[in-house]
Length: 191
Image (cartoon, rainbow, N blue to C red):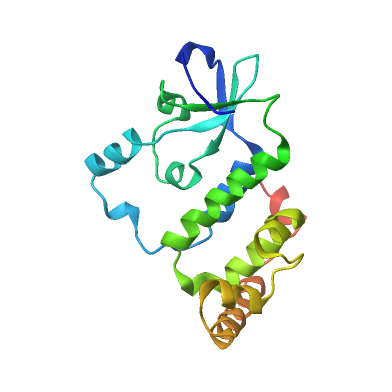
């Protein structure tokens, strides 16, 4: 059962939950409709002041942030400064791993639906198959492996659009791999 944090002093240490860290790394690979870097520092501060953290609090005072991952992506302040009395906490012993995963990935999809740039759909398919656990893929899409057809339906675009993006993505990945120049151990020994 979620609760509001009564005393900020209860939190001794704060970190991102491992699943939240994973989702944050997935998010960093995508382009979104709006570029937050165009906002003024005052606007960013206003956004930061509206962030309400949610997380798991254990008996030792460890607080693991599980939400809002997308807003943390634009925040420049340390997590410690975002802890307030309106922080939503879940007791570690009451919140199971599958509930945590559903909460974090659910938030991911809520944000995705409202701010994702659909030019990255091929990358989305790759990232979801790579990072979204199989049980979560089945939970959200009723599929063990996310297909082009599934992403086309999800994005309400024709499958051909996704096929072209997939082709461009493969070409981009091949080009970046082909431009890799390995070094030899002797290059390192010179210094």
